[in-house]
Image 1 (cartoon, rainbow, N blue to C red):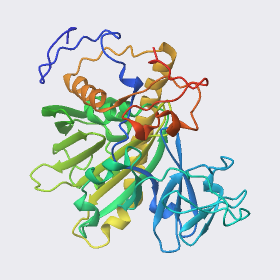
Image 2: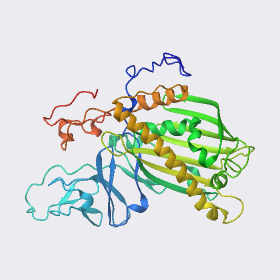
Image 3: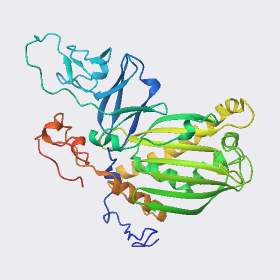
Image 4: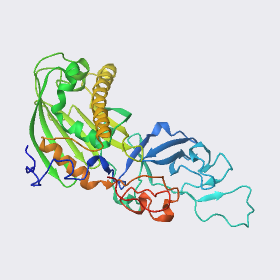
Length: 396
């Protein structure tokens, strides 16, 4: 594709690195529900230290079983509340025993006389929900939480499916993950696992918030992986029959479905979220739910499970090697030198860029962001205060 070519959306793209805002400097939009822990990791009356884009979050499960999410610092001496003690539905700091309710308000300062004035502010509380075996928080403006929907995954609760959960940290900007899964032309990378796969793009659709691509996968020779065949039934590696794979980025999540030839329902469905961990968003935590249709033979899915798990882990490991190498190249070059030729990827970059938020220069995290009006909840941009209290300019 020559510079300035027009894609399916009719947008003009100049691929020179300075023509567009560098996608790798775009932060993820906080006004969505993001998984930050597996539900099983947040045990009753216990705490769990989570993180979202540099914001440390203390999760704890009260005696009632309800999960709460608080800013992971005590308002007193900034000690992490995730080091604290759960008492009923409250969380008590391990240092001076200040206690907090689930809404972040201070409920007790043990050594302070009852008639003494208490600090007017506690700590930030995040809207939190549990679904699909994961704990979701809403790190953006809490007033928008009720308007934002959790993903709908009917296969998760279906008796006809068994779900495999993934939780891995990958050292790259989340956008590399979207590109990797959406661009199935990289199957040469997995040649040692799935053999020679010929992907054919059947078509794709775009909107301001999504990109959906459909591929025909044909096994053209080479070694066939047993785990892949079990995962896709008569799909990849199981026979020479082609499969249709549909991949969709619906901001900020991503899904994949594989439908074997002549089948009506998917052999498996994948839902995945890439949650930035650090403030610069150069590391992300991958939460994935792989919902696999059970074969008609009772118990067969349990016997196949170890082989399927091994196959998926090997594929993921190769993908991680690739995207982390892309991030290292970006770090070395200081900007994006990509010369992309695939219109589909240019369109998903547009979706990620326009739905994301700007990342501004991070000099020192502002512990009192609420007072200078630059907390993530105060606006869509992920902003940090410079050490002198002023707001820095855009990173160049």
